[in-house]
Picture 1 (cartoon, rainbow, N blue to C red):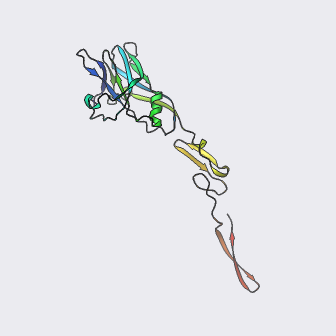
Picture 2: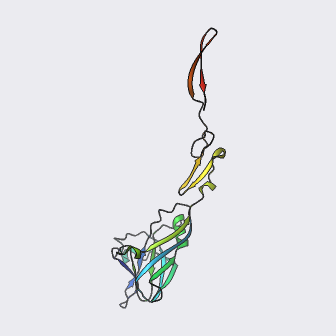
Picture 3: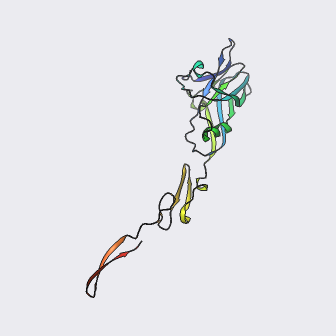
Amino acid sequence: FGALPTATVGSSANKKQYKSLLRFDLSFIPPGATVNSASVVLNTVSNGAGTVRAKRVTAPWSESLVTFRIWNNAQASNDEASFLAGPDDGGIGVLNLTALTQSWVNGTYANNGIVLLEESATASFATSESADEWLRPALDVAYTTPNYCATNSCADGSTCINTPTGYSCACFNGLSGPNCDVPRSACPCTGLFSSFAEGGMQSFEDCSY
């Protein structure tokens, strides 16, 4: 049901069990970044009266192809986060996934997303297909870019400049290269002059930087 504007979790009156899969693109976070906080925000369409839990998904899946049977409960045993879905939740559910997001960024776990589940009455949430983009699930991440200059040095006192994805060196004294460790080549000839000396003509090169 990946094309539906709502996702359902919980158990229905006829004892059907519903789970929902979510995955967020984290490619914008550079490797080595420190995740300071990461929270999934869900907007409820209908409230149940139980605790919605989130577990890490342990196998890849495709939104347009996955079924309950194909997915085969590929989930970790422990809960990553939970919230109470009910009349008092304000229509919003928040899952703190800071530790799990850090593990995804570090490559400790493959980013296969999370699965939402609930044992009691069903609750439904807006999905990425919701007509109202403000209701769609969001992963709010705050992170600190790595200090690449801490582990890379620029030669001969050149200045290291930290960037979102790496570092660069502002080279001095004619040095070049990524770390300013390539010395200036031999002095180029900037002019050819002639002078008369005893016994004939003598030529010499005048070189300068």
